[in-house]
Image (cartoon, rainbow, N blue to C red; front, side, top):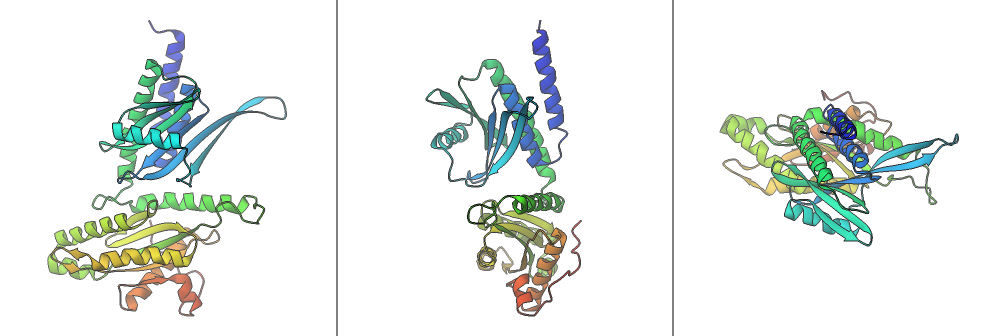
Length: 356
C-alpha cells in the first residue's frame, strides 16, 4: 500500500499538473514547467533550452529559487524567472549535455567535480525541440525519473496543442490571435528597461535594443488568384512564408496577419540594421522563381516601437508606410520615421489598423 507521504506527493503533483494545463499561454506554460519540477526534485535552479527546426538554440529560460530572511526574521522562498539573451555564453558542460540529449533523444547525465548535470529531452511533433536541465549532488532515482518523464510528456502534449492554436493553418506562421500576447510582452520589457537603474555609463539594461514592427504585402496578389486560381495563390503564400522563415533571423517573430499580409517584429539596435533585415527578405522573394507564376514581389513598411505609443498605433504607422511603398511602384520598403523626417508624413496618430 502507498504511504501517506506518497499519497501527499501524488496529490501535490496532480495539483501542479492541473494548474499547468489551465494556462493558455506557451511562455507562461514553460515557466510553470520549471516551477513545477524544481521543488519536486529538491533543486533551486532549473533551466529550459528551446531549439528551432534547424536545431539552433532559440531561447533559454532559467528559474531561480532562493531562501531569504525578511526584516522580521521570517524565511521566505523567493522565485524569479529570467530569459538569457546571450546564447553564446553558455557553459561548455551545458552545451555538451544538451547536444547529447538532442542527438541521443534520451535523458543524459554529465558529472563535473561533485555535481551531476542532468538533461531530459522535450519532444514536439516527433522531434526533440528542447531540453530540461538541472544540477545537484546526486543522480536521479528511478521514482524521480518516472515523475520527470510523466510531467514532460504532459507538458509537451499540451504545449503542442497551445502552439497549434496560435498558428496559421496554411503557413504554420504565428496567427493574429498570438500577436496581442507579444505586444504585451514587448511593452512589459520596455517598462522594465525604463525603470531599471542605469549603469556607470548611464545606460539602462537592454536599452541598446529597439523593436521594429513591419507590415509586408504580396504585390498584385489578387491578380495571381484571378489568373492562376486560389490553389496556386495558396502555394505562393506558403512558399513566401517559408522564404521569410528561412531568411529572417533566429528569434524574429513572423505572423500571417490575414490574406496576403504579414507582420514581422524584429529586435535590433538601429533603423539602418532593421532596414537591412527587411530588404534582405524582399530581395530573396524577388529573385525566387515561383512555380507557374514566376516572379513575385513584396512591399513593406516598418516603424519603431516606443513605450509612449500604443502597439496598434505603431502597427498603423508601419501599415501607412507600406501603402506609400505601394504608391511608389511596389517591390520596395519604406520606414515611417524616415517619411516623417522627409516631410512626406506628419508625425502623430494615424488611426488604428484593424488588428482584432
